[in-house]
Length: 179
Image 1 (cartoon, rainbow, N blue to C red):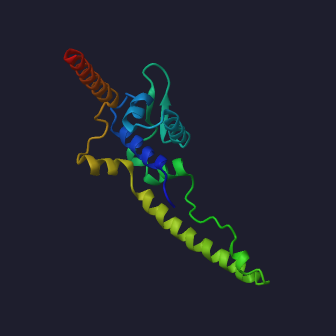
Image 2: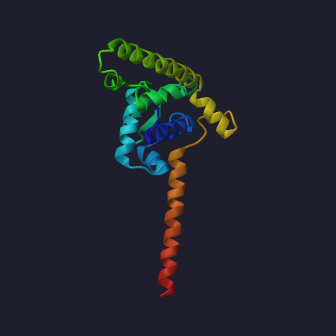
């Protein structure tokens, strides 16, 4: 199974939400500016996270997104399944029927069943492993601290945007002065 870019973005969103100050949802604009992705694409990912019950959408002027449950209760498997769907790496196209067209149907059935069993077992092991890895643990490992809910991404992003605008204004002013 090859995970898509949507999964990587969803993990980043979940990391942001798990480090966001409590009672202060992150705006979609802030998430969009941080991820630097298409707003339409972001909305699709956010919708999947909301529908799966991992994220809540808070309406209103001070609205945005927040975790629907504690980061210690959200696994990487939860995110995979929310964004990519159920883990099912082997979908047969029944090509084995082309190989054994000469009336050897028992080989077709047996071969198909065997391949499906192999991948079901592999999917199960992979899923079990991802279920053990919680979002909170990943954030702790990366941040090297045990403090979730310590960042206000909205304010941080506004400060950075303000600094960028100030720098741009200075550059424009400097160019105008040189003429």
